[in-house]
Length: 114
Length: 113
Image (cartoon, rainbow over all chains, first blue to last red):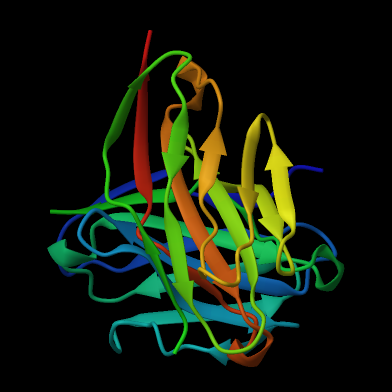
C-alpha cells in the first residue's frame, strides 16, 4: 500500500496567487482529513469528509480556503488568494471505518507564501 | 468540552535516559486515547493507543496507561535512543464528538548521543 499521497511536497508562491494542494487517500478509507500545522498554533483540523461529503468545515479559517472531494480517491484544498500568513505545512490524513480512529497521514505539503 | 494538555517542550535527554511526557485530558464520557509521533520532515503516525480505563498501550518500547481517575495518559520509555528524537502528540477521540481527534500541542524530544 502506497499510503496517503500528497502533492506537491513543497510549494512557494507569491501573495495573491491561487494554491491547490492535492491528496490521494489510502484505498478503501472513507474518511479524509485536512490539517494545517504551524509553530504558533500547532496542528489544526481544517475540514473532514466522510464518503466524499464534507462533514465539518468549522476549522476552515476563512472564505479564501475551499476543499473538495470529487471521488473517493482524490481531494483538493485550494487557497485563493493566498497570503503570507497561510504559510504552513498542510497534511492530509485518511481513516477507514474499521481502523478504530487511527488516522494515516501523508508526508505533508510545505507551503511558503512570499 | 474535550481538550488535551501536554507538557511543554522541548525535552532534551541523553541516550538511555528515562522519558516521561505528561498528558492530561478533559472529556465527557469514555474517550479513546492516542499517542502519535512525528519524525522530522514526515507526517504523524500512530505510536500507541488505549480504548478504555486501565488499558496500557505499548509499541517500540513506549508505554502509556489510560488512568481515568487522574484523567491522564502519560507516555514513558525506559531507555531512549537518538532515533526517538521527534515530536509527540497526545490525542483523544470521543464518540460524541463526531469522531474527530482532539490534539495536544505536541512535545518535542531531542535525544543526544
